[in-house]
Amino acid sequence: NDLLCNWTAALDWSQQIHWDGRASFQQAQWKKEFPAHGLKTKAYDRVQLTLVENAGHEVPRNQPVAAHAMMAAFIKSTL
Image (cartoon, rainbow, N blue to C red; front, side, top):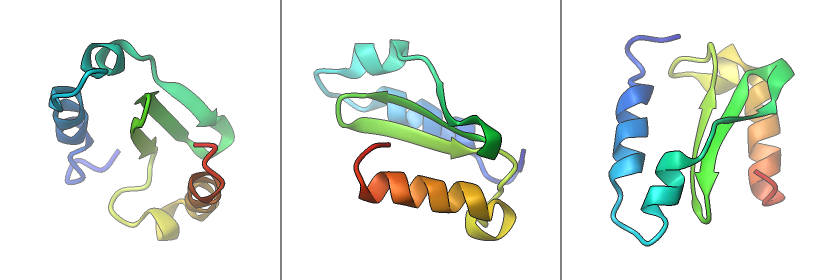
């Protein structure tokens, strides 16, 4: 909940990208990938927005378990 970390602008920007799956991405629901760690994603095809709740600008420092889970899933292509 970092007001200086403008995640709403990232969401707005990600929903304005011009591509064939734009409408589907806009309609996609948020999924809690790792609920215990505050990690959620909104995705369609190859476009994805990932948020880590209560992390601010320093995810590894403020939410180290969520940062690890996010990076591990990214590397394994499961997120």
